[in-house]
Length: 96
Image 1 (tube, rainbow, N blue to C red):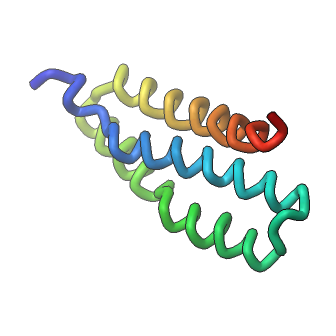
Image 2 (cartoon, helix red, strand yellow; image 1 turned 120 degrees about the vertical axis):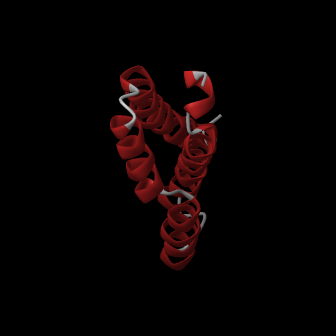
């Protein structure tokens, strides 16, 4: 089977988009455009429920079991680095 098909795109994209939205909501909270209640609801509740670190971990373990080392490294790096960049972009977007 082609290794490209084994890459967990769904979880990766959800986590990147959720990180972006969390950055947006954080900027709204920091700029006092939303209350702490809305921040907790949107940031912790919605984004926390939408993104899925547990699935990320499970899929990483699955790649380890299958000895798909290149995909594992790619998945971890892409998920972590791009999610952080996405959160930063969402946070900075408010300032543009």
